[in-house]
Length: 117
Image (cartoon, rainbow, N blue to C red; front, side, top):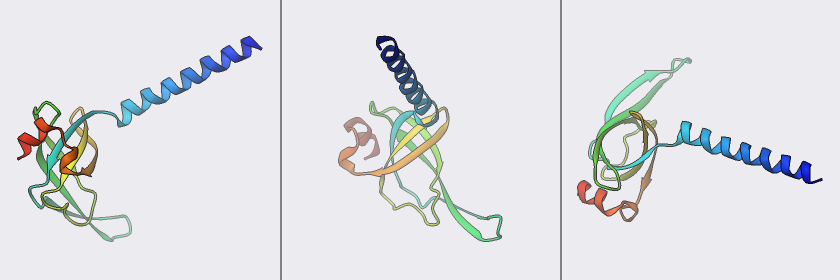
């Protein structure tokens, strides 16, 4: 019984560890904060059915929790521009914005917010 329990614990530990590693590799990254200051650049394109789809791209400065700046380039994946003056939390990894979400001003670290203001 001890042997089966030990094997089960080791197997679960390896599965959970692998899950976190995969999550970090494919979705993880560094957190930056930015503010939408433009309407973005409009990009219309056609899907396979011939329907016109709109998208907007942005190039904005982003700041980490220590106030260090990088240039963020990303698509909104929306058919309208993002709300002006909205604050975003961006996950960035090796030149690629992996995800973004709108956050409140109070959720931004002080050093990053000082750079945005």
